[in-house]
Length: 78
Image (tube, rainbow, N blue to C red; front, side, top):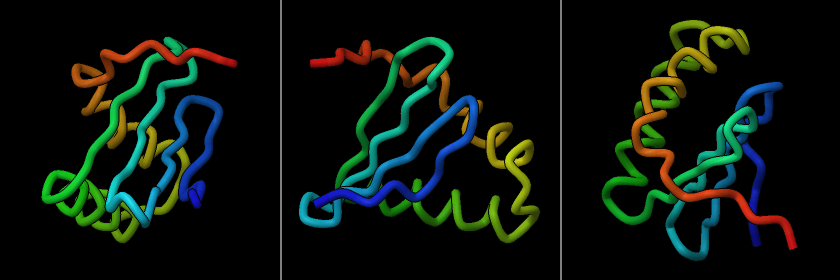
């Protein structure tokens, strides 16, 4: 099972509860990354903090842009 927890023109974030993980994808570059375990916990806390600050798509996209350096897995469509 997966839950799309954020979807904008630039990014989407998917939660995989059974794997205790999150996937972050930059739609513009078609690249992503996968966070699991403790890193996933920190990511979720940080994302919630960004949402609490300001829940606009612009602000959340700006927050997610801080992770661009980690987006090293090309998105492959099947």
